[in-house]
Length: 129
Length: 466
Image 1 (spheres, chains in turn cyan, orange):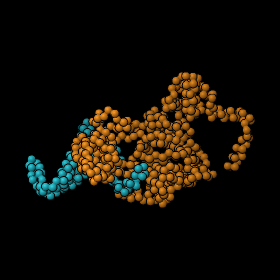
Image 2 (cartoon, rainbow over the protein chains, first blue to last red):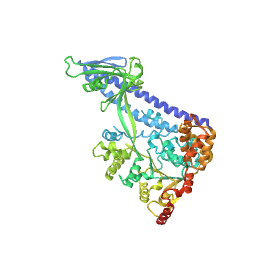
Image 3 (tube, each protein chain N blue to C red):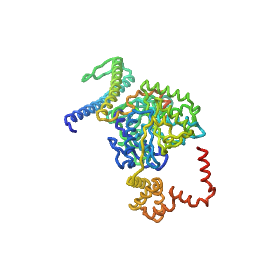
Image 4 (cartoon, rainbow over the protein chains, first blue to last red):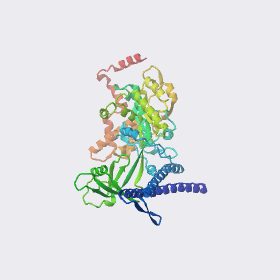
């Protein structure tokens, strides 16, 4: 630590990177929460036989036809899925970057593409399943 | 998940798996510090500083995947810690890098050819890293609700409420899932995972918050924390399998017999080629990584000229492991030929190797080793006994002295003492001969033994050899 400014900069970088990872994690949790709420709503809409439903848009309660409501919800669901997946992929890069800053070796196999289901079934035998 | 993988501490490799001789069970690593400088006594290693440092450098390169298809030769007199260094490297490599240990004479078998045995050993030392990815729902069960139709037949419907520390949600269940839940006997308070692709439910245990629900719980009940974060998780597991394991599974024609016999004998070349092709394909798709491991061949002078030329060729393969060999021979005949060569290894192969020499231990180091072995073998020894034993080790051999530890331990126990005293050492020293005394004895009383014209026979053999 002969150069305090340099080490301070280094520590700041690490903290920033770590903070980013943590906030991403929280984002994922929040998005998943939203996703589960949406899913519950879609199920609830399916079950009832009315033609319109009440939907809360911010502070407003609006009555809308069921078709339109479920369309919006389904679209939202797709958007959430995409968002969660994007965050998860970015997270891997960020974790490796953080480990690089901390002078640790990258997590082995983190950037590998996953095996397909069929391949995994075959390899499962090797792993004793 | 990424952060979990990152936090996972590298586990210490199981000792039993690589153990060939109990003599090295006290070795935990190479005993180097972060800058690869060897500590004098650490992790069961004593002395041999330059050899250990060299091994440490090799180890770093292996870890970074920088060297593959290289060979290292550990050369030194008997009892100078060659096998210990190899064991230390195996321990330090960690779980993720394959390490195969074999003795040179293991390749001679009636069941398979020499090259087949070598190929299998080489393929055992090459790992393939793959990743499995599953989408799971993980949470603590808050409530299970199943409605049966009044008639008893017809479809059941149900609801499952799951929660994590952050959220709670309700899932509607179909008939199939309800059956699964019934079968697994899932009830409120269990922590479960549901595989999204297959719908398989597995119980992880009961939540800690529900630990006081019942007074009597079976001993098999496992308590776990309520899961954190999101309900729908992506779980990524990285596996490392050796090429040989894949070979074995795929060369089985019909199933289970191979499970019991352990190995399958010879594996067809076509099977290997197909597997190589598949792995290459996965590598191109970014689905697999090759992890070059370490193949350790002890007593390498026992290999013959065919094996050496096979190794020479095999090392050139792009998927070759790092081969570490150990030998205690000086200039001697290459097995299978009449040519002499250093270490009994052909010059062309020797040329490819990095040679690390081990030197005989000094007296201080011998004492440290004996002390470590005493601890390992659960024997307490008084200081003067240890001094005597060290002197014995210096005059005879380290192995002989180590063997005296347990035997003198038994003798001391016989006289109801917990500590080995000098008298115990003296007693076992008189009971068990070392190599020199045994030879001395034979020379003196040779005439009284049977077939005592052995010296003549030896001369005759020398003539035949020459």
